[in-house]
Amino acid sequence: MEAHQGNRTHFIIKGISDVPELQLPLFLLVLLIYLITLGGNLTILLLVCLDRHLRTPMYFFLGNLSMLDISSTTVTLHKILATFVTGDKSVSFLECMAHVYFFMALQCTELLVLAAMSYDRYVAVCHPLHYHMVMSHGVCSLLAIGCWVSGFLEVIPHTSVISNFSCYASHEINHFFCDVLPLMRISCSDTSLLKLLIVTEGVFVSGLIPLSLTLIPYVFIILAVLKIPTNIGRRKAFYTCSSHITVVVLLYTTLYCLYLTPSSKNPLGSHKLFSLFNTAVVPMLNPLIYSLKNKDVKSSIKRKLHSISCRLFPSINFICK
Image 1: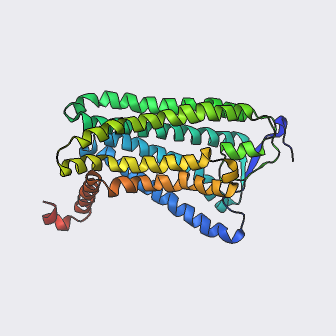
Image 2: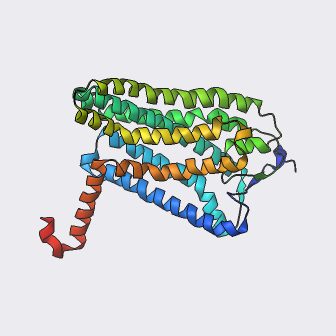
Image 3: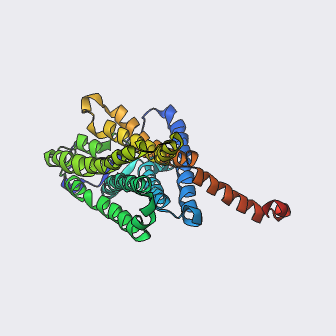
């Protein structure tokens, strides 16, 4: 059924699966992932804010990454959870455009924050004596503000073009949130401008530039590490970068599978799976990767748990001394 400019009032979000028997297991799975994501990222965020030992540039950017993961997961998964509770799959046109804008903006911002974290690792490994001078509080704040502002400005053209589509062949979006590609599939408007924007601004500006800014510092890091005479020194240098590299590989691999794979090789079913992995699993894994592979974070968690235990159970005061 064709929808024209005058009656673009709402869309229907079909969700992950139409099979009735899968609705409860999928709801429980998504709810569990969402709670783990919230718990893990809020823990990282609180530790960075409350523990003076983590008030360093690296953890400052990690806190920004946690805020992005919490926000993007909430934007994309809340409709699945709300639909199961209320049974209402409809989403207004304005809400749908808000989904599109905030998801793309948060994704672009995350890529830029990862690039800033890469620069931080470069300074730490290649210029350790000047680290605190180069990565001062003011510099870190400017980098973070630049990432957030750039990410939210970059996607305005895409959202503007999508919001001006004059008709849709269907109101049903075969996805679990409003995303660019599912909306393009049901639009009967001319999508050539949007495709051009995706290829030029989306791939090159929002994708390749952050990727280049992320990878180039690692070229210098690898060259610097290879000059370290001892194996212990080399392992320590690589260890400081391993969590960041893991997150970068996970995110960029998923984005490649989502947006750069030909549509013939990426049908709607696999697109949903890649989207679910990108919007739910990756944000859930990020705090686990950084906490499990990071001695500072684990030590901070132990200190906070010890402090809480001492306050709740003063009878074990001899342990707290």
